[in-house]
Image 1 (cartoon, rainbow, N blue to C red):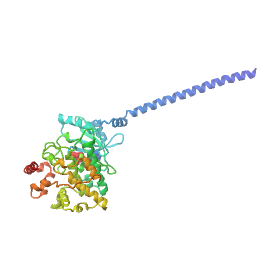
Image 2 (cartoon, rainbow, N blue to C red):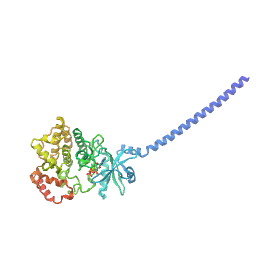
Image 3 (cartoon, rainbow, N blue to C red):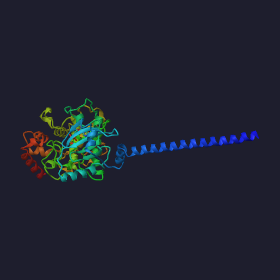
Image 4 (cartoon, rainbow, N blue to C red):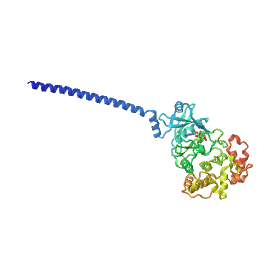
Length: 409
Ligand SMILES: Nc1ncnc2c1ncn2[C@@H]1O[C@H](COP(=O)(O)OP(=O)(O)OP(=O)(O)O)[C@@H](O)[C@H]1O
Ligand SMILES: [Mg+2]
């Protein structure tokens, strides 16, 4: 009997313990579930936070809209200036997720028409992606601040690597192979704008300052799609009233107010090729009269069968390099032909530079300057085109001579 009582009481105790254990387990499970829920809540907070919003918007292929306060915060009150150009000043910044950016604060005055163009351009530029084009992440369109937020390129513009006299010039000397790669990459970026992207884009301002370099010197074309934002400062062409192009790189049709097409980018690219070949500015009085305007000197050497003089400039070593330099020389001469129709398309330029297309001997691109006997020296005319538009008063007579030449050709 005593045993039976002991067994029954053990069962009851065990049942009580079991109940307690079950209760304990349930309590733990509940706690865990609550913790999970609270963790999920945190996840949700991250998802709607600035990093995720940013990434999602990138995935949605939409440029982000920033407020002026956000831009001030991400540039630490515009404390680090990267440079300035015709549209305004460019500052270094960092988005909340640590992504470095370049913020271009626009100085251009915006009437209603330009404002509409700005929004249209944002839509186009923000959806134009290519490995050789600088990416637009977003923009600011507040009452007092109009700005564009771009991907940041560590090595800045090609200018620094071509001329020794640019502020911020580095001691890094780019090998010939790297320069050739930069020429090909840039040509591919422009080809994409002209021939491959959904909405065809003419850049109008191809020049070394608008070719930016990543940490490993991959070139990316900057500032495409800005041409319609109106008149810029007087460092740029203004004869045609469009403010398009930069003296020295702008095609004749831009400064002669003739109809312009994507071929004006081909011309400017040719001028960049000359500067890459010579590692110098095309117009530089330091080089003595015969060489002060490099493109014409290159043509003369080519015509005299002395192209080796051009390509034996330092940095070109070995037969493969020599061939590439010679190709680049001929392509440059084709690109700067006076008549737009005589210039190649950018896809032909790419193929020629990559050695996939034979290069027909180029015609003289400068006969209109040579024949018209403008100025005391032929390069005198070109020195004028390199000055700011403010300094070119009196060029009207020269332009009328050229117009006459154009009509007669
Ligand atoms: N995305 C960027 N990443 C790094 N540096 C940049 C970037 N954009 C511009 N910069 C720097 O800022 C400088 C000024 O650029 P900006 O485009 O304002 O002038 P520009 O190219 O000389 O003239 P333009 O107004 O005709 O484009 C560049 O030369 C470059 O050094
Ligand atoms: Mg620029």
